Image (cartoon, rainbow over all chains, first blue to last red; front, side):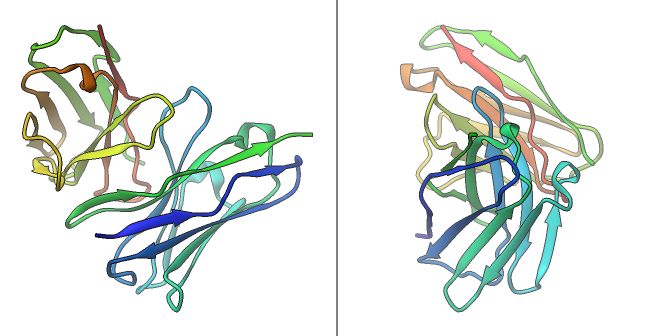
Length: 117
Length: 106
């Protein structure tokens, strides 16, 4: 059973960057699609970025193009997301998600990023 | 981008009710649709993938159907633990867009 463990909560100032990690265990890494989904307080789910490590393919939501970078390290089965030029409205819980694909979807526990001056 | 809509946006139901939620895609997404349940302050829980396949460990009271552009999630007999918000998500093409959610409450 795959598990996704994310890095801890972050508090950042506007204009700075944040890097969130997601370590996968218990399953195949390189052939799955990994995605970042964010949820602002009281809001719905918003897909942000995706990567297929084995292909090196990356995908971004238009809203975040240029401010978000997703990468993967196959040696450690870890996916990363960097959000730069942080704004107050980037305050959200960021979820790492494997899939949806083949055998369904697995969610990480979420990482709260608070942008605060 | 593929737009996802859900109806209704909210519904009131009672324990034992059969509940159906509809999700519509702005273009053909084949069967690449997933459903999630989320309770306040909790991580979303995967229910259905590939439109009708039950995620491992999920109760068979949940079922999904549809293909192309129109999909439904059905809860056969609503229980107290099922009061939550439900989201659909298409994964036919990037970006993998979500529906706005359907809140099921009393």
